[in-house]
Length: 244
Image: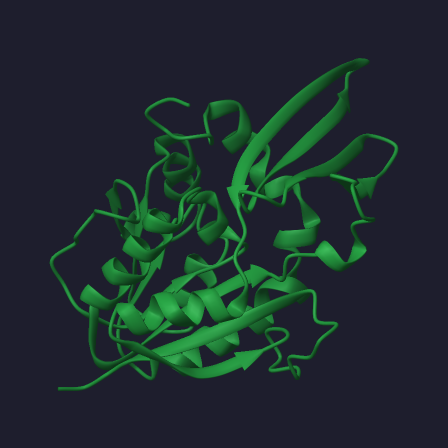
């Protein structure tokens, strides 16, 4: 860990290469739904990163700002068309206050799990609520813990097996933590990168929201408002700031 968190220059340089998160068919439904929730107001992205969501959202006419811990990630955003026009506060999404209020705060692609304690995740919800106008929305995109796939006594689940990349998640079900391990084959040599996470169930996030003065408004299984079911692999959850 360093001043830029886990996303240093090396990680930032290749972050957008992952077509699984940057392809148009992935980005467009997310941007459409976020624009709908913003409702003509301003939006704040926690962990704005390289701007893969914020920039196309801004092109739809939404005024977007961001908070981001990693300076190398922000440098990638700044290098893109329109990136210099987006205001970004350098800091963490738990304590950073941009001193403005928004109709939408959002946090995508499992980033809530980067906060590895319950206290930190709850503080993130409270920070989101503090940035919302009355009636505003907080949205997160996060995976459902895949523990049904984990055999009794086992701790490892593979999530990718390719010619140049292998990925495995290692679970600590006692402490509700896990680590994602990535191994890349690049130019004939192997590179490894591991990220610690904390998983939580939708019901736990709902409780955090209630403690932050938010109430559940919607929960879908995907960006196209797919039904959330017992076999959904992720959820898009939206909480609304209680007025008054």
